Structure formats: C-alpha cells, structure tokens
Amino acid sequence: MTIQQRPEPTGLFDIRYAAFLETVAHLRRPLHRYCARMTGSVLDGEDVMQETLFEVYRKIDQLDDPRALRPWLFRTAHNRCIDFLRNRKTRQRAEASFAVDEIVLPIEPAGQGADRAIERLVIHLPPKERACILLKDVFDHSLEEIADLVGSTVGGVKAALSRGRGKLAALPSHAITRPEPLQDPKLSTLLDRYVELFNRHDWDGVRALASADAQLRVSDCFRGPLSESIYFVEYEKGKANWTMAIGTFDDEIVLLVLHRGEDGWKPAYPVRIEATGGTINRISDYYACPWLIGAALAVAVVRPH
Image (cartoon, rainbow, N blue to C red; front, top):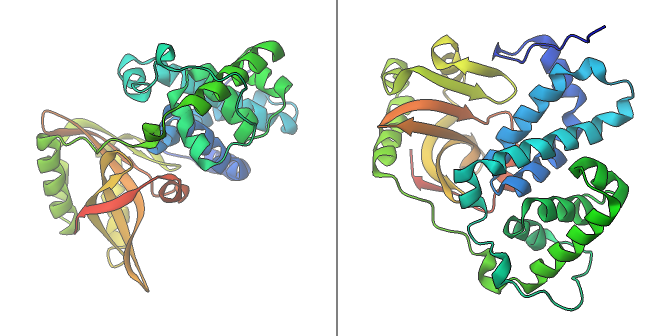
C-alpha cells in the first residue's frame, strides 16, 4: 500500500504543521547553523531549512523510529544545500574565493578542533569537504553517521576531512574578510519607499509596490500569494512596538524590523525583499526566527526609520 504524503504547507499553515514545528523546535538552531554554513548565508540557510522542514513534514508518517528524526532532518538539509549550491549563480557567489589550484596542502592536516572562525571559513571549501568538516568538527557526528548523511563511505569521509582541514590551515588570513553589501540603485529606491509607506501604515501604498502575483513567506506561518495574506494586519496590531529601517545583514541589504525596549530600538529580525524592474516579487519575513540576529556576523541600521 502506498503511503500518502501530507500536502506541502501553503497559505496560512495549519495546526498540524505547527505541532510538527513544536516537535522539532530543539533541532532548529543546529539545523539552521548547518544550512547557513553550507550555503554561506544566514538568510539562505534559513530558507533551505524551511524547505527541509516542509519536505520532512510531508513524509513524517514514514518515520517508524523517533530517534531517526534528527539524522533524517540533517540528511534532507544536506541534500537541499547541495541542490542550492548547484544553482550556477549561487555557486559562483558562494565559492568565488575557492580555487583548488591556489591552495597548497600542508604536510600535516589541521587539528580537529574547529572554533567559530574555522566554522565560518568552511565556505571556501567544496561542498563535500565543507559538509564533512561541519558534521565532524562542529556537530561531532561519527564517521559512520557522516558517511550516511552525505552519501559516502567512511574512507571517503576521512579523505574529505583530511583535504578540508589542510585547505583551511592554508587559507590566508584575509580570507575571513567579507565583501561590502552590493548596492542596487533601483532596489535602494524601492526599499526607501517601502519603509516610508510601511512606517506610515499605508498598506495600500505598500501593496502598490508589489506585482499582482508577488509571493510572501513568513517563516513558520504563511507561504503563498501576498494578495491572499493578512500580513499587514498583523503588523497593524503591534504598531506601537515596532518600526522598520533599511540595514545590512552580513553582506546583504535588507529591511530590519526594530523592537523597542528599555535601551531603545534594536534590530529584532530581517525582512528580505526581492524585486524585478523596480517591482517587488517576493517578501520573506523572518519574525519567527530569533536565532538569525545572533547568527549573523554583522547587523547594522544603514538608514534609520
């Protein structure tokens, strides 16, 4: 008998998906950490993790042993990350600084301890070596577990670890330098207008900036057409406690939602706007992901509210 998969969540997510997210809540931070290091972006890592959760949720009835949930999530996340990196534009950006012919391997491989700096340097490695370093030196998986997760053998994992550690040890000190966020004049103008209208609560004006088929993703809550959402209503409810500004999130220009506390306004989470020809075609709101601010290397307000 064929096991029927649950439908992929669309629109306002139902109570069953919310219950699933609660079940995997303790795995969200390490899973995101892995995806972010594999993709080279905290926000792309969150997007990949969201897709991973969708995929596993659809097939959750096939899980016989609850202990298998963590490896299943990591295996699915790994495969999603590899698919992400195979995209030509993404691969060119994520691995622009990696060139195997320019790296001389030391005689002895680097030690196994991987601190935060090493964790962030793995983006300079090819995907398999990157995954093996992360899973072994950051997440402390066994060689057998890693082989299963990345679809290799124990011998293959050992070889990837040796190559990867050697390349990390040979990286020049300037390899940790991050590029300046790219400036797109059209997007910059659009974001300025978006923030102005949003902070005035001119929702009709904000909608006019988006295409008729613009898509919205609010992490853990909604995925579908912006026109079918209650997105702006939710912001209206808490209007006294938030404001929006243009900022930087690592090497990307984003919108930052600021929450007011005892020490004034502070960034709470990013909102990513994607546009074509000066018109918004996608909004990704990460309000349900409090770990993102701490996971980023740098978050700053560029143009205040």
